[in-house]
Image: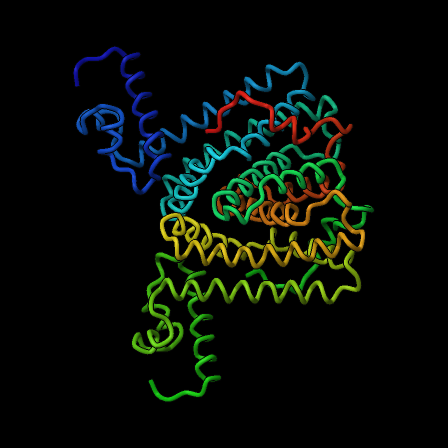
Length: 222
Length: 222
């Protein structure tokens, strides 16, 4: 490798990550070859391997880079808001916007492949768990701050609400990808709005409390 | 194949499906071989192929059989309730119980593998979409009935609420499987209860309305 300054190395590494991300989003994890990544990044295979030892290392770098960028985006959105209430509103808007954005399907497609891969690849599993933990911690501390400013009620557990929010988002984007026309994302989001504002049901006793739910028995999970 | 009566053929088919389900849940979709299924079902490979032409046909039969059984279970739960309000309560209890049940992880593991497989296998995709549509239609018509009895508010779109409910369930079970100790299922369910009963936030203006969410722009989905 020709002698490069540290910032040139960093720039080249970044270009490869961007090129790899484009390839993975276009063709998925398994279909993408390192040759394609080389072509997209305009680098030789020899050159690529100075930066990354394997396709697995590349996808790990893409995941880490994406997570950092996402958290930076979310932080900027929150900080552009005057107070925690408007920060939560702005982030809720982003949630709805992303859930409706067809572009998200390519990302979810890649994630489903990666999730399946993590079931048999512990190293990749650790990286995806680390990336997920970083996003969860960010959201948890935002909810904690919003709670301390009175946006959320006293009963709210910031950790639990962060987990729930991310689970709902994953369920929605999975629904759009997998079930296509059988999944009505706008209808689901409208129900989510009703749910968040307590307007789903008539009367309070429709849902169950946790103790009741825990002791309810008899049915098998399949 | 020795001459069997129709009910004997049906019984044998059912035994194979049960054996295959056990294998798939134990070892996943890719790791399970037809040899293992033969061993579990105590049948020869030649015998197996009188019933199913490929592993794909077997997994399809398992998916269809599981869907039928799940819908039958849910119907029995709903019908054992006196009215729609208690039916919705009983089904909510089931939702919470299943989301907490560690046994569900093996099912989700198999589903993640199947979902990844459907991204490149349109025949399997159709079968999973059909199975999902059957469950969604069942839930939608239950919500419709509950709405007509005044359990849900007039604004509720049964289709959207069915999609949302299934998306939340998928997000929760995916969270427990993939993120393990970093996912607090009890905390997430507690937040879901608060959300369902409108006790999440102080004041109504925290979440956004759909129009506002739709017009909110600027951020990229990654």
